[in-house]
Image 1 (tube, rainbow, N blue to C red):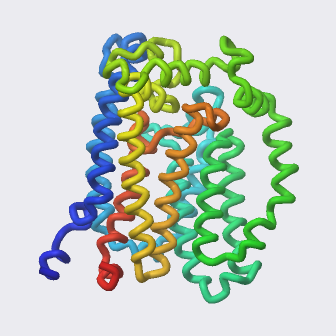
Image 2: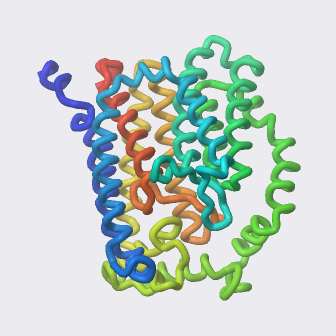
Length: 375
């Protein structure tokens, strides 16, 4: 029985990850089709342009997840610095006019041979791998401020600086929460973790209060109905989508907010379209799938007997959890507006590939022999 269990591929062995990820991805294809139909018809004279691309992304991503799940996670320690430097290089390439792509006033993408790629998505995964390796390696001195805290904050600061100039404040927040969470789990002193707070206050003032559009987002978050036809347009229409969905929803394809009312209905605000078309039942079902995934990720981190695997599994789980929390929070008006996708569901090839890659790594950690004593 034990031999048969070991012969099962990690992709199939970790059903607690595989099932919710596949279900979320398939739901994503369907909801991208519905949410993007009006935009797709207007721009490409077909209802299915974005859906077809998302379906291809989904198939490719599942294949990548299968391949990554086959790759022993311990080997990432040998490539941690290479992966990190590659991420930094890609972030720098965004500033090269010849290959950079600008959309919505942000310069966050690069075009490599006809393939548009968002380096900040790869940077999230690269930072998790590096922190997992470095925090585990320095475990014997993790309580030392100059060893357990400074080097990791320094690396985070480099990546954050390159992303903030794109600008992409939301991704910096995600990276900050991942970094803090991984250092906390690795055993960095709480006093060290809260030490940057005095510096964050003036920095937040400069990045938020002194930047008009970010300050506007904060003010609109506090009272979106003060200007529902201008600055509060996104959030008010998002709330209208949830309100009109009721318990069971209007039905797939029957929502109205995607009809040129709610901006970015197939990316940032796809959760709102889900609320309108699938109702409270659909929203709860999707949140339960995410909860199952996060519980499984937590169990993998807890049961792993290898510190590198534990820390990295924790980072990968935090990575998905934070993005779900922020995207859903924004759509429900619980957080200020940020341009973050809903994992596995929102339209976008880069985010889907990176999310699936993260799950492939998590699958391998969960199925590794490090768990023999914990199963």
